[in-house]
Image 1 (cartoon, rainbow, N blue to C red):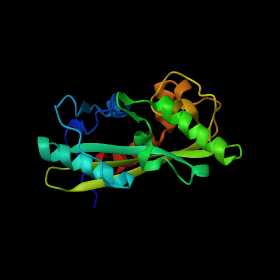
Image 2: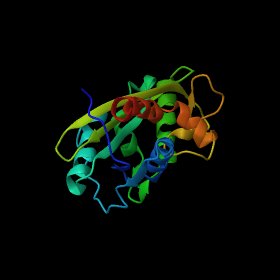
Image 3: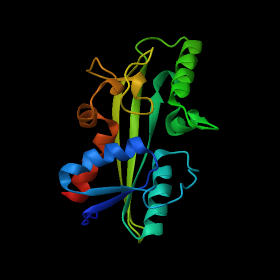
Length: 203
């Protein structure tokens, strides 16, 4: 039996401003106030797992334990078919620099690897998001979402975050970075996972 969420305030265990903004928009229709880990002065736990669910669990349970509040964590990334699913769980790592994350660098690396492999077009990829809702007593619920599409080059669009300028979802002519938030949030991997979460823990 899925545990129900009964509060009107939800802690999102992320320091990523783009993810937090998406979550605020996705939960706003429910009248749920979303707060981020940075607002609660929480440290970023080290992500030591090799799966989305493993890393999401680390972040959600650390935040719930530290605050005594239910905490929702997201671990997400892009899996490129011609790169055997890479970067996958290491998507953010591909963007790491001494001065923070540089996703233009990560997207360029991805494009160059595809060129080196002579990958055929269309270059298929999918975004994956795994949500873990954890309670202070150690219980958690897990929900996963995906959205499939193709990679474009050169990148297009200024909106969104991460690999959004490179990803064109199936059935659309625009990349995620060319879509307004409402349109992207209706079809994204995170929206898919959140819809399952709402059905399981909020309805």
